[in-house]
Amino acid sequence: MKIGVLGAGQLGRMLAIAAYPLGHQMAFTANSADEPAALLGQTFVNNDKQDTTEQLTNASEVITYESENTDVEIVKEISKKTPVYPGTKSLFTTQHRGREKAIFDKLSIPCAPYQMVNSLADLQAAVDTIGLPAILKTATEGYDGKGQFVIRSDNQLEKAWQSMNGVEAILEGFVNFKRELSLIAVRGIDNSHKYYPLVENTHHNGILRLTIAPAENISAKVQEQAEHYMQTLLDEMAHVGVLTIELFETSSGLVVNEMAPRVHNSGHWSIEGARTSQFENHVRAITGSPLGETTCLQQYCAMINIIGKHGPVDKVLALNNAHLHLYGKVERKDRKLGHITVTANTLNELNTTLSSLEAFMP
Image 1 (cartoon, rainbow, N blue to C red):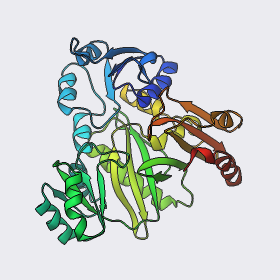
Image 2: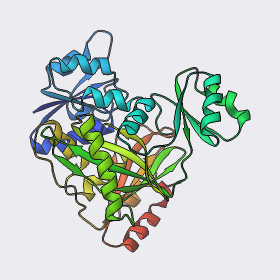
Image 3: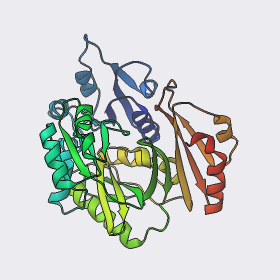
Image 4: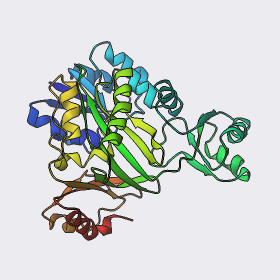
């Protein structure tokens, strides 16, 4: 099929790499001709002289997107002519933290206490209800720790609200957690479901730096609980494609933090680590193909993000169980330039390899 992608970043790039062996063709919209996916398919560059969305629609039999910040109205318009997966309900829900929390409440999925905030007075009322410490976040468009302010005392309220620049926000109560987990799943057009194992994520300054797959010491009951939450979300939104939920593991069970209607950074390990990568399964789902198996190929896997500077990449190439993925981006502070996947048969082998790659981790 001819697959269109709204966006041409590294996620589009990895979707294309997964799609071509299956016989598909790719097309992208891009802000510039040097974006990571631009050389991997027909690319329509945004400018005032062209309607790139219309061009992509005409060139595609099915369309997907890289980001939950994609304009819902554009997707609705495209859908009149060409199917878009995931659909508008998934997109509309996941691009607003309040709507996400509301669907969690509706489906009885545990999440942090929250309250929407549109003014300093709203913030004071929310703090009175939820208590401190708490975290104030923009309702939309925040990612990698951006658009967030941790509030620990009442004298920070005015500064916290000012940091939101007047946009709608959400106050979330703190969750005392043991570790951060995520679950990636895929749902086909025929309502078939596949789930990857829960993975453990480590963040630094709000940016994912390390994923361990599968997460250690996860009982079958915890995996089943996460899959139950995921299935209710997939079915409620009639989601087609990959969906990711980020969770906190607490002493009283799993608490869902947020979700993303797309292939996800915490699933990059699956390229070498799973029988079918998240990228291939997303392509399979949106093209109506049978979904692939999600089991791990080796006992342990990991993914290290390369952030800001490329670093000593030859160290990666010298290891027989590490795989380098660079996105073709120019170095810049906090920018995701690539990732490294690691596979191992023993925990000792995994830890030894990660130690040898410590230059890539803060």
